[in-house]
Length: 380
Image (cartoon, rainbow, N blue to C red; front, side, top):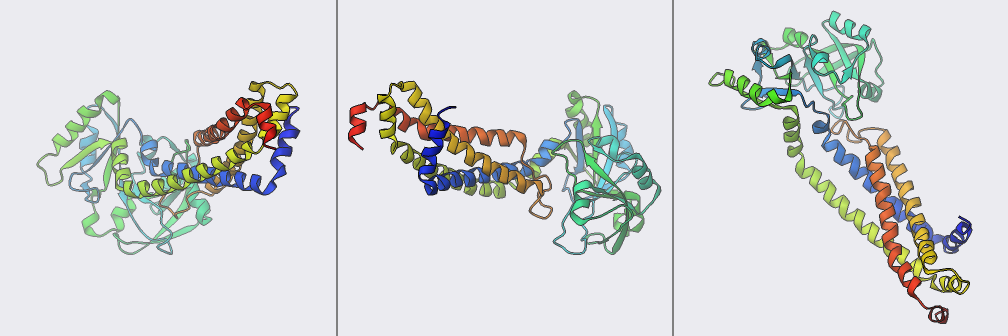
Protein backbone atom coordinates (compact mmCIF):
# COMPACT_ATOMS: atom_id res chain seq x y z
CA UNK A 1 0.00 0.00 0.00
CA UNK A 2 2.98 2.37 0.37
CA UNK A 3 3.08 2.61 -3.44
CA UNK A 4 -0.53 3.83 -3.65
CA UNK A 5 0.52 7.53 -3.84
CA UNK A 6 2.71 6.66 -6.84
CA UNK A 7 -0.19 4.88 -8.52
CA UNK A 8 -2.49 7.85 -7.86
CA UNK A 9 0.16 10.19 -9.26
CA UNK A 10 0.29 8.11 -12.44
CA UNK A 11 -3.48 8.13 -12.79
CA UNK A 12 -3.79 11.86 -12.18
CA UNK A 13 -0.99 12.75 -14.57
CA UNK A 14 -3.50 12.73 -17.43
CA UNK A 15 -6.72 13.53 -15.65
CA UNK A 16 -8.91 13.78 -18.75
CA UNK A 17 -7.95 10.36 -20.09
CA UNK A 18 -8.28 8.74 -16.68
CA UNK A 19 -11.68 10.35 -16.17
CA UNK A 20 -12.88 9.23 -19.59
CA UNK A 21 -11.62 5.70 -18.99
CA UNK A 22 -13.37 5.49 -15.63
CA UNK A 23 -16.46 7.04 -17.22
CA UNK A 24 -16.45 4.46 -20.00
CA UNK A 25 -16.29 1.70 -17.43
CA UNK A 26 -19.10 3.32 -15.46
CA UNK A 27 -21.31 3.50 -18.57
CA UNK A 28 -20.55 -0.13 -19.45
CA UNK A 29 -21.34 -1.45 -15.97
CA UNK A 30 -24.37 0.81 -15.65
CA UNK A 31 -25.67 -0.78 -18.84
CA UNK A 32 -24.79 -4.22 -17.47
CA UNK A 33 -26.86 -3.48 -14.36
CA UNK A 34 -29.88 -2.33 -16.37
CA UNK A 35 -29.64 -5.39 -18.63
CA UNK A 36 -29.43 -7.66 -15.60
CA UNK A 37 -32.51 -6.02 -14.06
CA UNK A 38 -34.36 -6.27 -17.39
CA UNK A 39 -33.44 -9.94 -17.74
CA UNK A 40 -34.66 -10.57 -14.20
CA UNK A 41 -37.89 -8.71 -14.91
CA UNK A 42 -38.64 -10.86 -17.96
CA UNK A 43 -38.00 -13.99 -15.91
CA UNK A 44 -39.91 -12.74 -12.86
CA UNK A 45 -42.97 -14.94 -13.29
CA UNK A 46 -40.95 -18.13 -13.58
CA UNK A 47 -38.72 -17.20 -10.64
CA UNK A 48 -41.65 -16.41 -8.35
CA UNK A 49 -43.82 -19.36 -9.44
CA UNK A 50 -44.60 -21.87 -6.71
CA UNK A 51 -43.05 -25.27 -7.27
CA UNK A 52 -46.00 -26.97 -5.58
CA UNK A 53 -48.74 -25.15 -7.50
CA UNK A 54 -50.62 -26.16 -10.63
CA UNK A 55 -52.72 -23.92 -12.87
CA UNK A 56 -55.89 -25.06 -14.63
CA UNK A 57 -57.00 -23.05 -17.66
CA UNK A 58 -59.41 -23.50 -20.51
CA UNK A 59 -57.82 -25.76 -23.11
CA UNK A 60 -58.74 -23.34 -25.90
CA UNK A 61 -57.19 -20.22 -24.41
CA UNK A 62 -56.41 -18.55 -21.12
CA UNK A 63 -58.95 -15.83 -21.88
CA UNK A 64 -61.76 -18.41 -22.12
CA UNK A 65 -63.46 -18.94 -18.72
CA UNK A 66 -64.24 -22.15 -16.86
CA UNK A 67 -67.38 -23.00 -14.84
CA UNK A 68 -67.17 -22.20 -11.14
CA UNK A 69 -68.56 -25.69 -10.54
CA UNK A 70 -65.15 -27.10 -11.48
CA UNK A 71 -63.72 -25.83 -8.20
CA UNK A 72 -65.24 -28.54 -6.00
CA UNK A 73 -64.46 -31.27 -8.55
CA UNK A 74 -60.81 -30.21 -8.70
CA UNK A 75 -60.61 -30.08 -4.90
CA UNK A 76 -61.71 -33.72 -4.71
CA UNK A 77 -58.87 -34.99 -6.89
CA UNK A 78 -56.47 -37.04 -4.72
CA UNK A 79 -53.27 -35.12 -4.03
CA UNK A 80 -54.88 -31.66 -4.20
CA UNK A 81 -54.65 -29.81 -0.87
CA UNK A 82 -56.29 -26.51 -1.82
CA UNK A 83 -57.89 -24.63 -4.71
CA UNK A 84 -58.51 -20.99 -5.50
CA UNK A 85 -59.51 -19.10 -8.64
CA UNK A 86 -58.99 -15.79 -10.41
CA UNK A 87 -60.53 -13.46 -12.96
CA UNK A 88 -58.47 -11.00 -14.99
CA UNK A 89 -60.34 -7.69 -14.81
CA UNK A 90 -58.33 -5.41 -17.10
CA UNK A 91 -59.94 -2.09 -16.18
CA UNK A 92 -58.54 1.43 -16.51
CA UNK A 93 -57.62 3.59 -13.54
CA UNK A 94 -58.05 7.26 -14.58
CA UNK A 95 -55.83 6.87 -17.68
CA UNK A 96 -54.86 3.96 -19.91
CA UNK A 97 -51.20 4.66 -19.12
CA UNK A 98 -51.84 3.61 -15.51
CA UNK A 99 -51.52 -0.08 -16.24
CA UNK A 100 -51.48 -2.62 -13.42
CA UNK A 101 -52.77 -6.16 -12.95
CA UNK A 102 -56.29 -6.35 -11.49
CA UNK A 103 -57.64 -9.68 -10.27
CA UNK A 104 -60.97 -10.74 -8.86
CA UNK A 105 -59.96 -13.37 -6.31
CA UNK A 106 -61.46 -16.04 -4.10
CA UNK A 107 -61.05 -14.38 -0.68
CA UNK A 108 -61.43 -17.61 1.31
CA UNK A 109 -58.45 -19.37 -0.24
CA UNK A 110 -56.15 -16.73 -1.74
CA UNK A 111 -53.63 -16.57 1.09
CA UNK A 112 -53.78 -20.32 1.66
CA UNK A 113 -52.56 -21.03 -1.85
CA UNK A 114 -50.29 -17.97 -2.19
CA UNK A 115 -48.69 -17.93 1.24
CA UNK A 116 -45.73 -15.89 -0.03
CA UNK A 117 -48.04 -12.88 0.30
CA UNK A 118 -49.02 -11.47 3.68
CA UNK A 119 -51.76 -9.08 4.77
CA UNK A 120 -52.27 -7.81 8.35
CA UNK A 121 -55.10 -9.73 10.02
CA UNK A 122 -57.28 -6.68 10.67
CA UNK A 123 -56.98 -5.57 7.03
CA UNK A 124 -57.80 -9.04 5.73
CA UNK A 125 -60.83 -9.30 8.00
CA UNK A 126 -62.01 -5.94 6.65
CA UNK A 127 -61.59 -7.34 3.15
CA UNK A 128 -63.67 -10.40 4.02
CA UNK A 129 -66.39 -8.28 5.57
CA UNK A 130 -67.09 -5.84 2.73
CA UNK A 131 -68.25 -6.79 -0.74
CA UNK A 132 -66.64 -3.79 -2.50
CA UNK A 133 -63.35 -3.98 -0.55
CA UNK A 134 -60.00 -4.23 -2.30
CA UNK A 135 -56.37 -4.97 -1.40
CA UNK A 136 -53.43 -3.34 -3.19
CA UNK A 137 -49.81 -4.38 -3.40
CA UNK A 138 -47.41 -2.24 -1.39
CA UNK A 139 -45.54 -0.93 -4.46
CA UNK A 140 -48.77 -0.24 -6.33
CA UNK A 141 -50.08 1.84 -3.41
CA UNK A 142 -46.80 3.77 -3.26
CA UNK A 143 -46.97 4.43 -6.99
CA UNK A 144 -50.35 6.17 -6.78
CA UNK A 145 -50.15 7.45 -3.21
CA UNK A 146 -53.11 5.36 -2.04
CA UNK A 147 -53.97 5.03 1.63
CA UNK A 148 -56.43 2.89 3.54
CA UNK A 149 -59.95 4.24 3.22
CA UNK A 150 -59.52 5.60 -0.30
CA UNK A 151 -62.11 4.93 -2.97
CA UNK A 152 -60.47 3.51 -6.10
CA UNK A 153 -62.49 4.13 -9.29
CA UNK A 154 -61.82 1.77 -12.19
CA UNK A 155 -63.54 1.84 -15.55
CA UNK A 156 -64.36 -1.59 -16.85
CA UNK A 157 -63.32 -2.75 -20.32
CA UNK A 158 -64.24 -6.43 -20.69
CA UNK A 159 -66.55 -5.99 -17.72
CA UNK A 160 -68.45 -2.85 -18.60
CA UNK A 161 -69.34 -0.04 -16.22
CA UNK A 162 -67.76 2.18 -13.61
CA UNK A 163 -66.52 0.21 -10.61
CA UNK A 164 -65.85 1.70 -7.20
CA UNK A 165 -63.60 -0.14 -4.73
CA UNK A 166 -62.91 0.64 -1.07
CA UNK A 167 -59.22 0.20 -0.22
CA UNK A 168 -58.96 -1.63 3.10
CA UNK A 169 -55.39 -2.96 3.12
CA UNK A 170 -52.07 -3.71 1.49
CA UNK A 171 -50.25 -6.95 0.85
CA UNK A 172 -46.50 -7.57 0.90
CA UNK A 173 -44.31 -10.27 -0.60
CA UNK A 174 -41.90 -12.26 1.52
CA UNK A 175 -39.29 -12.49 -1.28
CA UNK A 176 -37.59 -9.90 -3.47
CA UNK A 177 -39.10 -11.41 -6.62
CA UNK A 178 -42.70 -11.34 -5.35
CA UNK A 179 -44.99 -9.05 -7.33
CA UNK A 180 -46.30 -6.24 -5.13
CA UNK A 181 -48.06 -4.33 -7.92
CA UNK A 182 -51.32 -6.30 -8.13
CA UNK A 183 -54.83 -5.12 -7.28
CA UNK A 184 -57.20 -7.64 -5.65
CA UNK A 185 -60.94 -7.43 -5.19
CA UNK A 186 -63.60 -9.99 -4.37
CA UNK A 187 -64.80 -12.37 -7.05
CA UNK A 188 -68.31 -12.47 -5.58
CA UNK A 189 -68.58 -8.70 -6.20
CA UNK A 190 -67.62 -9.28 -9.83
CA UNK A 191 -70.14 -12.11 -10.12
CA UNK A 192 -72.85 -9.90 -8.63
CA UNK A 193 -72.28 -6.87 -10.86
CA UNK A 194 -71.00 -8.38 -14.12
CA UNK A 195 -73.06 -9.19 -17.20
CA UNK A 196 -74.91 -12.49 -17.42
CA UNK A 197 -72.24 -14.16 -19.57
CA UNK A 198 -69.65 -13.73 -16.80
CA UNK A 199 -71.70 -15.07 -13.91
CA UNK A 200 -70.80 -18.46 -12.49
CA UNK A 201 -67.42 -18.43 -14.19
CA UNK A 202 -63.76 -18.57 -13.13
CA UNK A 203 -60.91 -17.24 -15.24
CA UNK A 204 -58.53 -19.98 -14.14
CA UNK A 205 -57.80 -22.12 -11.10
CA UNK A 206 -54.64 -22.37 -9.02
CA UNK A 207 -54.16 -25.35 -6.73
CA UNK A 208 -51.62 -26.77 -4.34
CA UNK A 209 -50.51 -30.38 -4.37
CA UNK A 210 -49.31 -32.46 -1.47
CA UNK A 211 -46.13 -33.65 -3.20
CA UNK A 212 -44.20 -32.75 -6.32
CA UNK A 213 -44.24 -36.43 -7.19
CA UNK A 214 -48.02 -36.14 -7.64
CA UNK A 215 -47.85 -33.36 -10.24
CA UNK A 216 -48.14 -35.45 -13.39
CA UNK A 217 -50.78 -37.73 -11.93
CA UNK A 218 -52.89 -34.78 -10.75
CA UNK A 219 -52.55 -33.03 -14.12
CA UNK A 220 -53.80 -36.10 -15.95
CA UNK A 221 -56.62 -36.68 -13.46
CA UNK A 222 -57.97 -33.14 -13.79
CA UNK A 223 -57.75 -32.95 -17.58
CA UNK A 224 -59.16 -36.44 -17.93
CA UNK A 225 -62.13 -35.56 -15.74
CA UNK A 226 -63.17 -32.73 -18.04
CA UNK A 227 -62.20 -34.32 -21.36
CA UNK A 228 -64.86 -34.16 -24.10
CA UNK A 229 -66.85 -31.58 -22.09
CA UNK A 230 -67.90 -28.13 -23.26
CA UNK A 231 -65.05 -26.69 -21.17
CA UNK A 232 -62.00 -28.89 -21.55
CA UNK A 233 -59.03 -27.99 -19.38
CA UNK A 234 -55.29 -27.72 -19.61
CA UNK A 235 -53.41 -28.29 -16.37
CA UNK A 236 -49.74 -27.40 -16.00
CA UNK A 237 -47.30 -26.38 -13.34
CA UNK A 238 -47.20 -22.70 -12.48
CA UNK A 239 -43.59 -22.58 -13.58
CA UNK A 240 -44.48 -24.03 -17.00
CA UNK A 241 -47.24 -21.46 -17.41
CA UNK A 242 -44.86 -18.67 -16.42
CA UNK A 243 -42.29 -19.93 -18.91
CA UNK A 244 -44.88 -19.79 -21.70
CA UNK A 245 -45.56 -16.14 -20.87
CA UNK A 246 -41.83 -15.44 -20.98
CA UNK A 247 -41.60 -17.04 -24.43
CA UNK A 248 -44.33 -14.71 -25.70
CA UNK A 249 -42.07 -11.78 -24.77
CA UNK A 250 -38.95 -13.58 -25.96
CA UNK A 251 -38.39 -11.49 -29.09
CA UNK A 252 -38.52 -8.26 -27.12
CA UNK A 253 -36.15 -9.63 -24.50
CA UNK A 254 -33.75 -10.93 -27.15
CA UNK A 255 -33.74 -7.57 -28.94
CA UNK A 256 -33.05 -5.60 -25.77
CA UNK A 257 -30.32 -7.95 -24.58
CA UNK A 258 -28.69 -8.22 -28.02
CA UNK A 259 -28.44 -4.47 -28.64
CA UNK A 260 -27.42 -3.81 -25.05
CA UNK A 261 -24.77 -6.53 -25.09
CA UNK A 262 -23.17 -5.19 -28.30
CA UNK A 263 -22.96 -1.70 -26.84
CA UNK A 264 -21.66 -3.06 -23.54
CA UNK A 265 -18.83 -5.13 -25.02
CA UNK A 266 -17.90 -2.35 -27.43
CA UNK A 267 -17.44 -0.04 -24.49
CA UNK A 268 -15.32 -2.62 -22.72
CA UNK A 269 -13.07 -3.09 -25.76
CA UNK A 270 -12.57 0.65 -26.15
CA UNK A 271 -11.90 1.00 -22.44
CA UNK A 272 -9.48 -1.92 -22.39
CA UNK A 273 -7.53 -0.48 -25.32
CA UNK A 274 -7.30 2.92 -23.63
CA UNK A 275 -6.03 1.35 -20.44
CA UNK A 276 -3.46 -0.71 -22.35
CA UNK A 277 -2.08 2.44 -24.01
CA UNK A 278 -1.87 4.19 -20.64
CA UNK A 279 0.12 1.33 -19.17
CA UNK A 280 2.51 1.14 -22.12
CA UNK A 281 3.36 4.82 -21.67
CA UNK A 282 4.82 3.98 -18.27
CA UNK A 283 7.40 1.43 -19.38
CA UNK A 284 10.14 3.99 -18.77
CA UNK A 285 9.05 4.43 -15.17
CA UNK A 286 8.89 0.67 -14.81
CA UNK A 287 12.47 0.49 -16.11
CA UNK A 288 13.55 2.92 -13.39
CA UNK A 289 11.93 0.72 -10.77
CA UNK A 290 13.76 -2.25 -12.22
CA UNK A 291 17.04 -0.35 -12.04
CA UNK A 292 16.32 0.32 -8.35
CA UNK A 293 16.09 -3.41 -7.73
CA UNK A 294 12.39 -4.22 -7.86
CA UNK A 295 11.70 -7.70 -9.25
CA UNK A 296 9.60 -8.76 -12.20
CA UNK A 297 6.75 -10.17 -10.07
CA UNK A 298 6.47 -6.90 -8.15
CA UNK A 299 6.31 -4.87 -11.37
CA UNK A 300 3.69 -7.19 -12.82
CA UNK A 301 1.54 -6.79 -9.72
CA UNK A 302 2.13 -3.03 -9.68
CA UNK A 303 0.85 -2.55 -13.23
CA UNK A 304 -2.08 -4.91 -12.80
CA UNK A 305 -3.12 -3.15 -9.60
CA UNK A 306 -3.18 0.16 -11.44
CA UNK A 307 -5.33 -1.16 -14.27
CA UNK A 308 -7.73 -2.98 -11.95
CA UNK A 309 -8.04 0.09 -9.73
CA UNK A 310 -9.35 2.10 -12.68
CA UNK A 311 -11.67 -0.74 -13.63
CA UNK A 312 -13.09 -1.20 -10.15
CA UNK A 313 -13.67 2.53 -9.60
CA UNK A 314 -15.58 2.74 -12.88
CA UNK A 315 -17.43 -0.54 -12.27
CA UNK A 316 -18.44 0.48 -8.77
CA UNK A 317 -19.68 3.86 -9.95
CA UNK A 318 -21.71 2.34 -12.79
CA UNK A 319 -23.30 -0.35 -10.62
CA UNK A 320 -24.20 2.15 -7.90
CA UNK A 321 -25.96 4.32 -10.48
CA UNK A 322 -27.79 1.28 -11.87
CA UNK A 323 -28.87 0.25 -8.37
CA UNK A 324 -30.16 3.75 -7.63
CA UNK A 325 -32.20 3.70 -10.84
CA UNK A 326 -33.75 0.30 -10.07
CA UNK A 327 -34.70 1.40 -6.55
CA UNK A 328 -37.48 3.49 -8.08
CA UNK A 329 -39.05 0.30 -9.47
CA UNK A 330 -40.64 -0.42 -12.82
CA UNK A 331 -39.74 2.22 -15.44
CA UNK A 332 -42.33 0.88 -17.92
CA UNK A 333 -45.47 1.83 -16.01
CA UNK A 334 -46.57 -1.67 -15.05
CA UNK A 335 -45.20 -3.96 -17.77
CA UNK A 336 -42.21 -5.09 -15.68
CA UNK A 337 -43.46 -5.01 -12.09
CA UNK A 338 -40.41 -6.80 -10.67
CA UNK A 339 -37.53 -4.56 -11.71
CA UNK A 340 -34.59 -4.77 -9.33
CA UNK A 341 -30.86 -5.38 -9.38
CA UNK A 342 -30.07 -8.45 -7.31
CA UNK A 343 -26.97 -8.88 -5.10
CA UNK A 344 -25.90 -11.70 -7.43
CA UNK A 345 -25.96 -9.33 -10.41
CA UNK A 346 -23.98 -6.72 -8.48
CA UNK A 347 -21.38 -9.33 -7.57
CA UNK A 348 -21.21 -10.51 -11.19
CA UNK A 349 -20.75 -6.91 -12.37
CA UNK A 350 -17.87 -6.31 -9.96
CA UNK A 351 -16.32 -9.59 -11.01
CA UNK A 352 -16.62 -8.62 -14.66
CA UNK A 353 -15.00 -5.26 -13.97
CA UNK A 354 -12.15 -6.97 -12.14
CA UNK A 355 -11.68 -9.44 -14.99
CA UNK A 356 -11.54 -6.73 -17.66
CA UNK A 357 -9.13 -4.70 -15.54
CA UNK A 358 -6.81 -7.68 -15.21
CA UNK A 359 -7.04 -8.66 -18.88
CA UNK A 360 -6.51 -5.12 -20.18
CA UNK A 361 -3.43 -4.70 -18.00
CA UNK A 362 -2.02 -8.21 -18.36
CA UNK A 363 -0.33 -7.94 -21.75
CA UNK A 364 1.24 -4.50 -21.20
CA UNK A 365 2.35 -5.56 -17.72
CA UNK A 366 3.89 -8.76 -19.05
CA UNK A 367 5.69 -6.85 -21.82
CA UNK A 368 7.01 -4.32 -19.33
CA UNK A 369 8.13 -7.12 -17.03
CA UNK A 370 10.13 -8.79 -19.84
CA UNK A 371 11.55 -5.53 -21.11
CA UNK A 372 15.26 -4.94 -20.57
CA UNK A 373 16.15 -1.83 -18.57
CA UNK A 374 18.49 -0.47 -21.24
CA UNK A 375 15.89 -0.89 -24.00
CA UNK A 376 13.19 0.75 -21.89
CA UNK A 377 15.33 3.75 -20.96
CA UNK A 378 16.34 4.20 -24.60
CA UNK A 379 12.66 4.90 -25.41
CA UNK A 380 12.50 7.90 -23.10
